[in-house]
Length: 325
Ligand code: PEP
Ligand code: MG
Image (cartoon, rainbow, N blue to C red; front, side, top):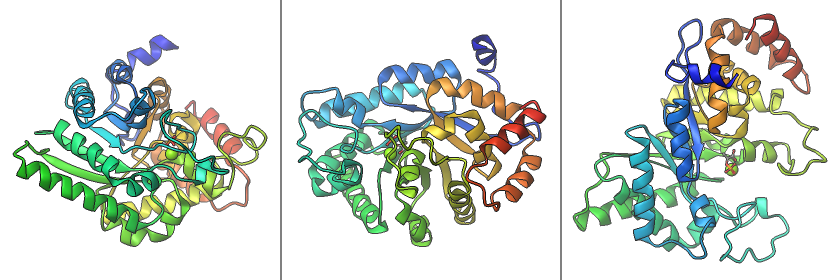
């Protein structure tokens, strides 16, 4: 099987009816950049900047952040990298950071909530990213945004840092694309004003799923109760696909479901054209895509998502089996 995936490395992820799907990798360590080349992905769809923060005993300063981000850009060798700003808190504990014994850390002081309350942290990180991407394209996104105003606040800090770097005579990125992660369901009801403000949106399905169903992503007692292939998830995501398409906002999904071939099939079937996943999933997902006739699946999905089913998993599994997908 491994050899089969390796043989697909330089082949595009194109469906039988000619629709190209962008497959990207999630990364957090430098070694993940090697995997980017190994599996022949299109870029890094999610670079989790908290991972290097977690591996240290103190907060890295601007200089060491610049060096690290620059190395990542160099390793990516011209392929786009989406940097997510610090997503600390929740299940990602920084050893030098007091979490104040929160009872519900997943819904607590984490991600953009921390960095908006400690703006020097975010400003240092943004400054480092801007500097590391001098002359190249910078893609930056903010995690756990619950309100458009939080994004606007973060964006203001980004603009301030760009201005500051420019005054200081540093080389600016050739282009800056700004995005938001869709992880908190409240954003589903602010799509109109959100999409006006951003260049791209990336669904963090791990968190979005846990908050949609109020179901702890790490609790095994409930992990099989709800399914990512439920009409609730797929209908919510279909409406996001439609709005992003109308507003010309690049949409991707970077949660774990994007790396599971059957889930990825459903996502492509409701209109996703860009997925980001752990590197080892790229081969299996590419194989699925190359055996898929998308137009038929799209019709099928439209019928299925309106049914009062708990999960479409069984029916999609059968669909795939019948068509040798
Ligand atoms: C997600 O929530 O889906 C996601 C990609 O972010 P993380 O898994 O790092 O929380
Ligand atoms: Mg998340």
